[in-house]
Image 1 (cartoon, rainbow, N blue to C red):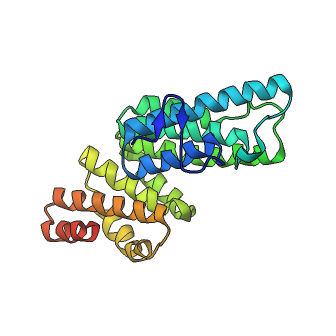
Image 2: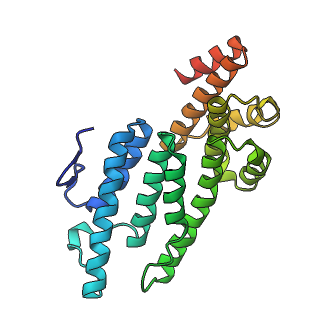
Image 3: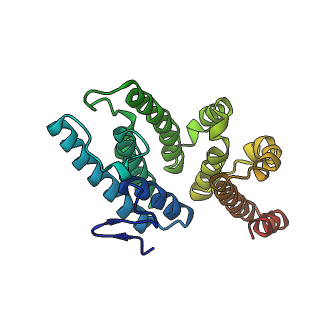
Length: 233
């Protein structure tokens, strides 16, 4: 993508703060699986957040032009930047580095003078960290936690769709047979997933179909795999 340059990250509106532009551009890079661009954007988010935090500590306030207010508490962009970096490393298969960044957004308690809203953000990212630790452990081959992860996504419905993507991505990466979960869990949920309408979940749904196609090819269920491929298209 051409939207990220050395001097900043730009979208169409001049009235959107650069941190929020970076947030949206990372999401776009994620949807396009453009991990090099995603990494540059994540670095930009963290660099700018750090400069703003240092200014905040120095001047005891966050000075931002009135037409470019950030939409979220500043601590959010630290958590999001670390999360973004962990995703990039995960997608490149650098699982130890992904874990290092997960640890960073799991513990944002270093943020000075945190407000109640800041504390809510900190707890929010702790939840993300728990889910993503499971994902990285599975992808790196720790099949022994699979039952625990299944229980986790059943208890946290918002994790179901990305969670099943992780399970089948891990199965494909590590050559596991997970038919028990395929026949007992995923097939009954696919119809509900297919009815989700927001763009983020549509992207997740296509990613899941792709992993299911790969999985069924590996299990030599070619007719089933072809149907998933057609659904993707």
